[in-house]
Image (tube, rainbow, N blue to C red):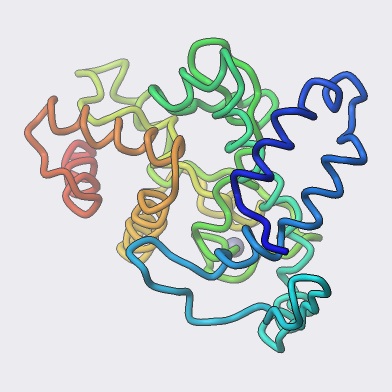
Length: 264
Ligand SMILES: [Zn+2]
C-alpha cells in the first residue's frame, strides 16, 4: 500500500471543515496522518535545500509500509538528554506559530510581506499591520544563536532568567534624538535584539557591543536569513532600508560597521 501526498491532502481537504467545527481532527484525518507520515514527512525530515542532507540522522525507518518501525538514533537520544532539551519545546512552538500565522488569513499577508515587529509589553512578535501576537521574542530567536546568551556565550537553560538585549543600546537613539539626530537604523527591531541572561544584560547596561558580540550578531542574523519567512523578511527589510539610506552593502558585517560609524 503506498500513500501519496495527494491522497493525504485530499483527505485533509475533505475533513477540514468538520475538524474545525470539532476543535480537533476527525478520526479519519488522524488515521490518514498516521498512515502517511512515514511515507511523507518522515522521508523528508533530514533533507536540506539543494539536494543535501543534515549531517546527523535522528531516526531510521525500517519495516514494510504495512508495519513501519521507527528506530531512534543515539544522536536523537543525545539531544533529548541535553540541558537544552527543555528549551526546545518553546522553540519548536515558536517556529510552528510563525508558520501557522503565515497561513492565517489576515495576519499571513502582512507577515510575509512586511515581517514582524516587537511588542515590549508582552515580549511577543506581532504582525505589523494588525498587531496580532504571533509568538514569543526569545523563543523565536534563541535557536539561531544555538540557545546561547549573545553576551557570555553560555547556554541559556530553562531555569535561567532571560532578557532581550538591545545589542546596540536603545539609549543611543534617545541620546542622539535630542541633539543632532540618530542617523543609524532603528535599534528596536529584530536585527538588534538578542536573548541573553538577565544578569549579563543588566551588567552590560548601556555600553556599545564588543567586537566578539558583533561577530556573534552577524552569525545570528545570517542564520535567520537562511530560515523561511517571515523572520528572514524582517531582516531583509532592515538591510534594504540601510542600503537605500546610505548605500551600505547588503551584508551584515557592512551593515553593522555602518551602525558603529553612526555611533561616532
Ligand atoms: Zn550570559
